[in-house]
Image (cartoon, rainbow, N blue to C red; front, side, top):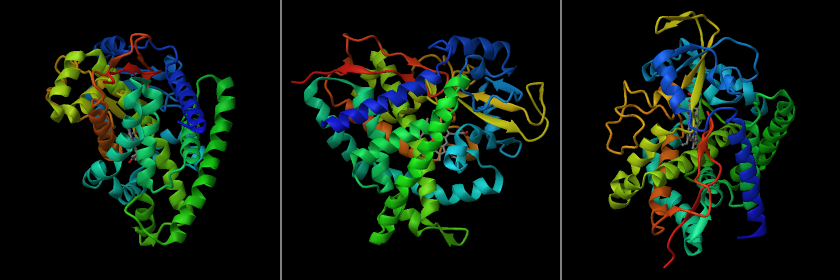
Length: 430
Ligand code: HEM
């Protein structure tokens, strides 16, 4: 490992920890007992679950004092997410939209969202991504990471694997040149943009201008990559190639539009997979019988991904705003009120999941909310799930993988962007 690569990992860990810290606020590391209580006592609650724990909330990122209602039940959240005409998404851009010229698919509504989504989602459809499983994703995971780790016998899997591998895989699919500086810079800037909203105004004074600079640096770095790709004239089967050859409403995308879209995708594509993968490994290591089941039967790997994402999702909440006066569970929600949908709570709703706290791979699945649901459901979910499946399969090739007894047990924390601070593991080397 080069010194430069080491420094890049250090920077990524630092940025990642800042986000975890910001989204942990004053909340208990294990918020599930609190969710259980609220789901049964006040499933449609006046107030903002995140802000009350001093965690930035997409229901009111800029803390304007907008009225907020928090939803805790699966069915209520499912119905909000399925109904985009009554529940709008534009508020999601309040926090860091400005840093990316407000070009965020997740914050678009109505026809605008439909049109862009239709064009952009094609290279992320399941069939397309499954083709990459063994041609692009597995070679990155095995050759660049697992085989490098194997002789060492121990690692902080968060630093050495979970942080860099999704970015490497994703950047290869974008069609970017393989360059450590580029990878490290873009990944850090992406995290700095996401870290803009803060509940402490003094901290926000630093993070908001930093996010603006980061957003601009991303664009300035992406533009020449896009221009060089086009100038080469060789359209490959990757995202850049797709965006240069596709049409949107009868026109092709300009280089600037492509750079803008790639920037938007970069915000969504890295850390979420890192955290979901790390949360999966922590849960499996804490439940050795379940880990053993997966070791014995690799066909359970996709279930391990979805069940761990259900039980402890990284995206703990999403938000919408009422387009007109609405009512949920007998509570009137006036137009202009934001709803904060606690996905983490919905995922353990006993009305929907039997014995919801248990990590149970053979449980009958219901539509998973951990990637959101409805028209805004995560566009990169097949990429993320395929990356996580390959990563789990390959990490299980490290014999007798277990927690490193020399370190504190990893703890998943945060009310949103949940994840552990580190993931120290050991395995047998002979
Ligand atoms: C395990 C990893 C991931 C998780 C947990 C996750 C989670 C989510 C969630 C919860 C939403 C819905 C937000 C809402 O409804 O307000 C979303 C949307 C989105 N995600 Fe992901 N995501 C992951 C990976 C990715 C990747 C790898 C990409 C990029 C390729 C991506 C791109 C997007 C985009 C573009 C949207 C907006 C979709 C729309 O509004 O139509 N995500 N994601």
